[in-house]
Length: 178
Image (tube, rainbow, N blue to C red):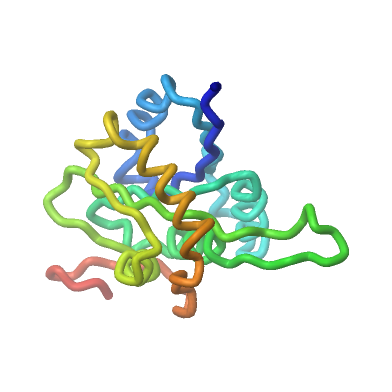
């Protein structure tokens, strides 16, 4: 039996964690996994345009993978990607335009301190999000993606998406996020 293709969206801090995305793209080559993450800077778009681009990229994905580094939880657009990923809706006029919530996979990068987005932490705490350490990506990525898809299909009642979206990036000041 052929492996089923798994599509995922990668959410990460572009300035700090790009090297891990490149490694992830190399690691996943031996798997039947497609990567739909944003590869171009769209920060000059309006918020509405960015939201549309994010949703369109996620539409065919099963899972959102969040690479958790030292500043991940400080980033406005990562929070928006999480919010969009978890926000399902039905379009009765055009069912193809409906949006199913995505599974969540948190990957803790090998850094000294992790900054976990509040929305992601709420979903880890609720049991909806699956998590793993970067050192196990080579061995466990495919099984963790499959588990996140199982959670999406069987435990979406555990989704926590009621937090206000961040309206700006936060800064780290003496260990505090402000």
